[in-house]
Image (cartoon, rainbow, N blue to C red; front, side, top):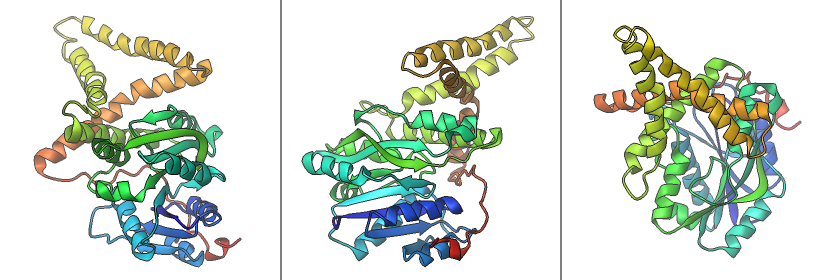
Length: 340
């Protein structure tokens, strides 16, 4: 496949990155890895595999969007005739057969800018949070509005919209897709396994931080593209405000004047969890998975509200939010493991 290149990004992914690069080097000739100041030996390990490495300048804020743009730029400098680029995160592994299917889709449908497939969790049984991530990746098939970080893109389309918005700390893929669709391009998801992902979330605190980042992303996305007709993430942002801020504040602030009657508003949360769980269960999930996912959606409004407030607070101060990290730094990857 001489028409396709690949950009992998990572920050302290440790063993996950080694698995990622090993999986892509078996399938793609032109690979660039972009590192965001890792301290776990990721750069040395990638170099030992013969991968072209770009190390981001730490004086500028890190973001996945910035890393992908820098990787894409270097990829095109080295191989200017590429037609397609596969982006992949350093905590993912490329699944055999995906690239052939993805390229076929782009070749036969010139109106498509992005094609993605099914991202699956490598260890869904390791924690309820990994299981939640696996359910999160199971998005609809067909023409869609957005993609995940792992996606196959048409170089011409990516260049037309000048890549990702490097200032975003999250939600950069849907934001890119908004701009692509505004230029007449389409986004498509096919029923094909694409990548294995390792969420590596084992503690409630990690899950909370991840949702803080999501809340910030929803709010910033709505701020950028919330105008009609797109109304990007406006509904999601309003839901975060309602369930994460307004209802709990009303319930607690009115408790004294209503002699505690306002606290009954809090019963709307378990009621909503039941309603959402029953609705999701109709999609074929087991009862336990359906209600676990419903719990995550509703309780997740609280950390998302924190992320929402973080966005507005920093906006008023004229500051950019720094990268929100929730994963544990893995041990340094020994160089000799890179080739074993």
